[in-house]
Picture 1: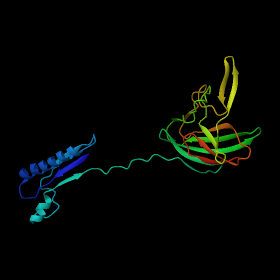
Picture 2: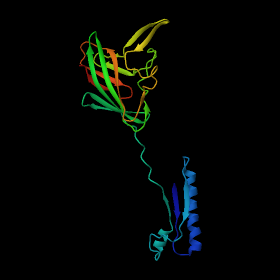
Picture 3: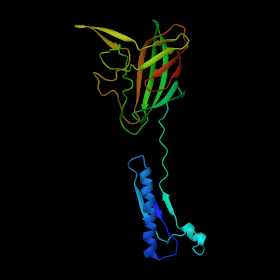
Length: 235
């Protein structure tokens, strides 16, 4: 709400000054309305006559300054900044923060372990830090060729920066009567168990992904869903 207030000096009485001050305010309101470039702005015009002097009406200069129009409006609130995903060392691994549909979530990588046969196991925990129940669907996303039968925690990437090579979650081939189904070697999120992608306030869930790992790499860049990149040591 924008308020335009008109004022007059003490030369006349209220019968003269009240409508005079209102006309001054209305003239300014019309000028401001013509300049507006956005919808939804309300401009209110008021006349206060000579009842609110700021200067001494005993002088011509004081009267001149009291014949005035003021425009007031609430100070605009700064736009809320979208939280930026960050990473930092955690107490038992590496951690990050981010948002999902405007809700705060946190991530902690609890391990990247080397297994026999050139495999690696990535484990991590995701927690809903907000006050409302929220779906976490960012882990569902896959590339077109990753046509898994059931959606799972596939939106995870490991990168060997030095070798310029990226590793995706492993796939399991399961024979069926119609051929072969592909399943992600990772935590289920939906499909058979439709409710597993939903987080209650404060709820933490543990996830895992199985990868092929290079034999000599000691640290890999880990990208999980919407969270920032993490540099995770291989144990």
